[in-house]
Length: 114
Image (cartoon, rainbow, N blue to C red):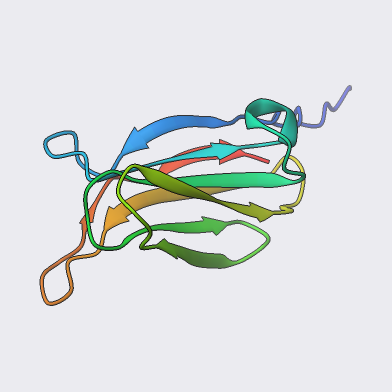
């Protein structure tokens, strides 16, 4: 009897997606390696503020825990956040507009693989 181990998940980046398809205040993407979106090394989140006070990404993985990265720069600008996640593991991320006293305006989670 032959037993086959499951195939490893290949790296999978997440292209830009918005916090809300209606008003599009923020967008984010995830690059599973530096070659996908530029010269940064490691796995990279790109958070882009379109028209809001503060925007953020919230992420979690199955091996590296979770985190939150915020950006409150000028409109139509963005920032990279570089991490080095374990290879072949999932990375879930959502992008949000911070609303203060009201619920944040967030996308659903998207899943990529480092």
